[in-house]
Amino acid sequence: MNSLLIPCIGTIYSPFSDLQNMPIQPVGAADVEGTVVIMPAFVDGLKDLDGFSHLYLFYFFHGARQEKMRVVPFMDTEERGVFSTRSPLRPSHLGMSVVELLEVKGAELRILGVDVLNGTPLVDIKPYIPAFDHRENVRTGWMTREREGVVSARSDHRFV
Image (cartoon, rainbow, N blue to C red):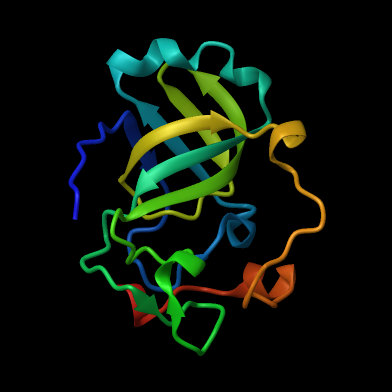
């Protein structure tokens, strides 16, 4: 395994202090507010971010303690290859969420739809741009659950 050093640019704060019973995706945390605090060296990079309604947050699953190449995802009962899932037990422990940006105030971002553990190390931020990111005729592989099933799903012991 090749080890890269990726700097963290800040921290994501949420009301979730326990990995169990958390929303498993941002759509299940639609009304959950959080804060992102950016390190002073990176605050200048927030210029013009307030013009965007949604952001991609890239972060480390810092609560993940193992790596597995096959997992049983929250939305399934069958073992799947980790790269066909959003499991935190991946080799990089890298996660991604699309959140709504409510406010930029100095080094702090107020966000909505946060589905991560409190104190999550932030790796990067990118604006969500529908003209770049929206796709038609998408296949979702084994994932057949409708949005409502994802909204109500909560984490359990599998990835703790």
